[in-house]
Image (cartoon, rainbow, N blue to C red):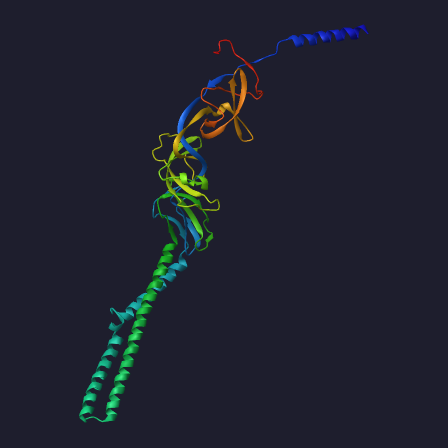
Length: 390
């Protein structure tokens, strides 16, 4: 019994001592003084990098792919051969069509029109002789020197010669028509033969191949994609309630893989389009003569955040990204205010590499905790270190 009392007394003494010990206060963490800067007002979007000259090339005839002249990623010049399709049958067809057109031209000779053909000229001469004979017969019959029977015979000869001339002229016109048709067929055969050699419509880079060597390509099926990377644009949709703020020439800032790039609006739809009922905007990205030689290359099809300047300015607070925390997609930061830790929910205007421009939640001149700790408590007091300025 005495042992229990002694133990209890000892424990009681220890509790009393613990209660009397002063509470531990966290030393004030390292802080930085925030600065606000004036920047242009912007609206933020996510855009896709596109090229104005981007072509998927096909053959109207199709055929077996015999070979590619360029691999994916290689540069091509305008007019360079890209794909060679099988053309044996088309070559024979082209030769046959050309031979038929040549034969038809030989039958016509040097005639410039249907009336100039020898057959038409001979029929015309026979008709003129018969017509002259009929006129003379009319005069002789009027004078009483020719019988009615002979006059009738002369008139019949004239009508027969006229019909023969009309028939010869119609046949000559048909011959000219056949020549034009055969020449058109020969031209189509040549065009089809030429279509088997697929060429680059402009200088650029081979981006994709859709059919492999030895496979059959259907007519008008995609064969190869060529893109010109000398000009790239960022394309994004502006919702209806902001559509009137778009203007040609306005500046756009693009954050591409940590590198800030500038662009200028060069095209926008005059109305709202698409299922989203928005205004489509394209801005040309400055890619020529990159001052930053280490800047990553822009990839067509990549999606990047973009900020469209809409006129006017605003004050934003510049915050290091490393000094923030993220919970459920919301960005937060800690500040030291009146000797206590305060957590702030940030309204982000935009990201610039390892920096964040904040529109709300922080003010210039506040003391931002440089490196937040996971055990920070809201309103927790902090003790100033020796030598810290008050």
